Length: 396
Image (cartoon, rainbow, N blue to C red):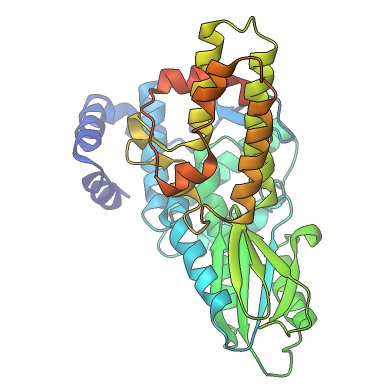
């Protein structure tokens, strides 16, 4: 583990690397003691007061030594499997290209139902123990976290949401699914982001019917003690015939609409609802206010935030937010973007008595945010001040 930790620290950005090394030097004896006693490192505490359909947890001790010891353990896993290693944009672009390609194929789309709540502890421990690239120490820490979860939640299945290590453990489980599906020689393309899966099979063979391929993928998921979500599962034979109705596949915020001679990328229905709800809440907040100049400024800033693009600060300083970056396959003239702009125009018209404010809002649109890649400068504090009205929208 020590060698891998050295490599991982060397790969960090310079300023972060220097900080981690300095902290480890200060607390190294305590950190090593904690690494040697897994159970004391992973004591869970339920997080109260969150409006969430799923229980969320945090780790009890957050002093420097505990944080650094967890970093050491997570590094052991991160060196081999990182859930952040997959580029969503590149993945979706590759899927779009595959769907456009005219050769005969069967496409199966599904995801794992209640994945984090369904992972078998017994199976996960075996997976970790059987991986030669993971140290025995890592297996001990995984067992310690699972024991703590059982004591806290009273369940021997599931991973604690809110704990960073759970993401890596989930990847270990789903890597088994990758291997199972990858063994099929008829698989020509395979796309997975966490538990969202698309498998593309070549045409022909004894089990080439869409329903057979769907059962095959579902069976691979069930072999891990998990269940495919029937509401998000489909199997299609492509290309569609000329008489076929339009079909669609929703994946990672996109809705790929399939016709006999074309594929178009739209925003998913969930994403459209989320953005429309943000617009509605911004105008509702203004309508319920005193409608002062400050309230009007706040409304304009919120609509700028929703329709434009901006760069995050702090640890995510290299990340960009906005449709131009989150959904680059969707054009400004797409049906979904036009729908968002229509909804925004109706909200703007609803405050018809304030012509000056309308004049400031009318230039703002989702389409211009994409076409012009329009940026707004925004601080983390300002984002927090403006976005509190959008909390608990059920965003994933």
